[in-house]
Length: 508
Image (tube, rainbow, N blue to C red; front, top):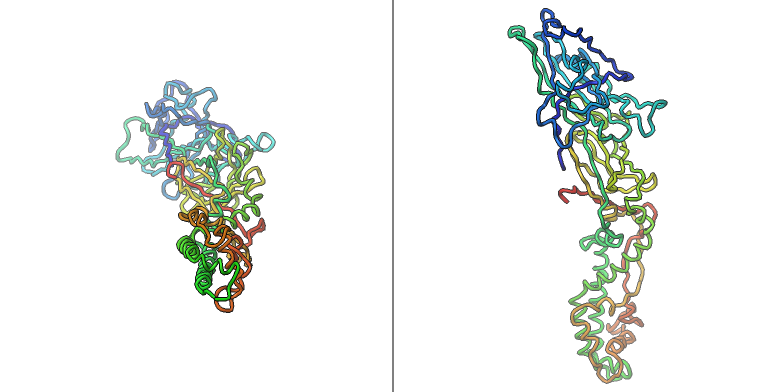
């Protein structure tokens, strides 16, 4: 997470009209009378706010200020004393030095306050609602007020606009207390050269990972993770059936019935090949687990491919995005004390801004135990979602996130299952096992057939009553070996969820 602090001294306020605001204009003194003595009555003192912040105000990425609201509250009780807005002309650059200000602006940055009264003073930039008359807002549909409850400090709220911020209208704020005692009267005006505005919004940019996880890998690494339930069903069945097969074929090859003839007689003479086969199977069951898992996962990919495809679209094709916060989680309002709040009367979603870099950008406020979100809707049609995520940003910070749209797949707890006898090719499952190739090249005793064919004579033994074979294996083969494995029914119905992954770009 990156923090961008802009210690830019505030200066200029705009007297543009603002519906629902009660503004007080300073009545400037006449030219030639601009002196503390001319403005200060008995029991009052004169304060002069400066905007000349020196080198710190000339940063490479300077703060943009279009309007600046000046608030004064009683520190005890929080009642509003005065509120005014100072105009910044469009052709003026910010920050302004005293030399760059207009006469009206210099007057607006002066005030007369009472001795022995503790005040809370604030400068807030860009809270003129007319600055957000774009998108769906304009002259005939003006943006609603973005400050409410400001007649009492503790009730005052700055609201997020209903459109994304632009680079020139971020909210910024400076606050301090002011308390001048009459027992130490000033000899001249109080100079306040420390009005440092700071942005109070958060910015989050989400971009799609360059190569999204494939649906195959998402299923293989979640639903069929090796420590999971469904992989466990494969292991259980394979262990049971392979162990039984080893027992049966070992008995059969060693029985040597005097009346055996033909293929069974040839089979009995190939006891060394049977011994090698059973050794390979006993020591390499995982190859069979993974072979069967692959068959299941490939089938599931085909079943839910249509859910996956729209989620991993190239974000260069996104025209709109909406961030969907968890219930009552969006910090859509912030107090003048910079405490974030969720206002239930305001939207719990954020409109994303599509950047030139094909990221989704959205803005917010800091908020303790707020701001978790679980999904983003793209192009008003496709929603990518997953585990709730929170950047936990503080004011004036930028967080870059990387989104993998389908990192994993989850199933409902009560998902339907199926189980039935299916047949799998053990020669295919074992082909990459060390020693398997040597086994298949063994010369069969008393037969011109390959060793796999000779081994398969076992499945016609017919002596399962003597414990040589069971009815599940009879008339099958190594190429059609029967397993009955419980597995979930994964379809496009609502029993499956495709889960995103969000990671911090600077700390993946």
